[in-house]
Image 1 (cartoon, rainbow, N blue to C red):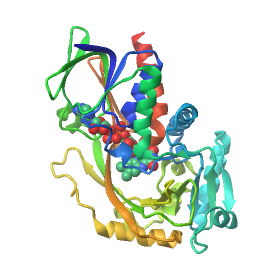
Image 2 (image 1 turned 120 degrees about the horizontal axis):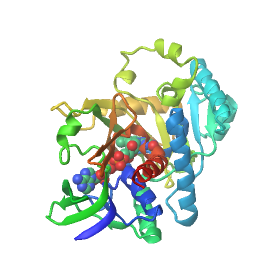
Image 3 (image 1 turned 180 degrees about the vertical axis):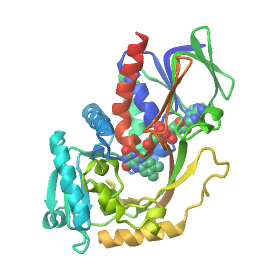
Image 4 (image 1 turned 60 degrees about the vertical axis):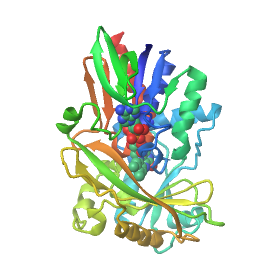
Length: 386
Ligand SMILES: Cc1cc2nc3c(=O)[nH]c(=O)nc-3n(C[C@H](O)[C@H](O)[C@H](O)COP(=O)(O)OP(=O)(O)OC[C@H]3O[C@@H](n4cnc5c(N)ncnc54)[C@H](O)[C@@H]3O)c2cc1C
């Protein structure tokens, strides 16, 4: 029977990050994934690594992640592009929030610079004069190609730290016995480890279904679109716009946030469907546009309708066209993505029998914060066990 110090179940970004840091600590680690490579939220996102959007606690994890992504990129191409993030305000209220966030960031020593309307128009070709009031730019932030990055961190960690990657293997049972955790795969094989990290994303049916059912976890469904390649137009970095300023957690720390939010129409279609408009141009010239957010508690028997709601996509395209003149809005792909999050805390982290550590429900911040969060989490767990 194969025996490891640590087995991580689930090769999404949360699992990859935990496996990476365990390997760095010198442990013998296996990372197990039910598919060939991750196929869920970790590959279905924008690949925007944006600590600027997070509250102070998670911004720290995000900043740590930025450093780790950049360090790995120096040795192995994991598709990191340091092109910065911009938040584009569409009115004076959003501009006030940008000014306030810029002051908060100065205090926290996190570089950002305010951009005038003209500077925005010069920096972002196709941006509409009728939309933008000004911007806030974060030069240290990066973006990645999510379809590649997870895979490549796995390859890097296998080559550098001897990570054992076990794909196409579903774990269907975990038990603790004689001081170890025994894992049974769907084909009946047994694996053994001193500690297990269960990072199974929004898979709640297989392992510990009762525990998840009594939690405050909820599932979130997001809709995304990708245009065909823009022939000439090049837009660098992560582009976040007015509704994002009104949505992201970092802005909740701004003094005028509450009064600005109080004036919003909570019955609008945009609010009901949790829509904000973000853009990211891929290296091939195509542009990802999204996204919407629909919510469903894990307690509900009735799940989401898994079809794409075309009304949402139509609305997002119309709104996107008010912000950018893209050379073409023709689409080559649409997809839905799902992640889980907690309604009353910022992550679901629970340890069973001292040896099984469940980490899920990281919400919309996984690509940004997982590497930094996992570093802290592994240090914490190993220090308790030392
Ligand atoms: C549309 C969309 C856009 C987003 N944009 C961004 C963004 O730009 N920036 C950002 O920071 N975050 C973004 N996010 C959030 C981010 O993608 C998620 O927070 C993150 O990917 C969650 O990672 P995870 O590892 O928890 O889950 P997952 O990616 O779901 O991975 C879980 C893995 O566990 C495996 N698994 C489950 N059960 C088992 C089992 N029993 N045995 C073996 N394997 C198992 C699954 O196959 C899966 O690969 C976005 C998310 C979506 C959906």
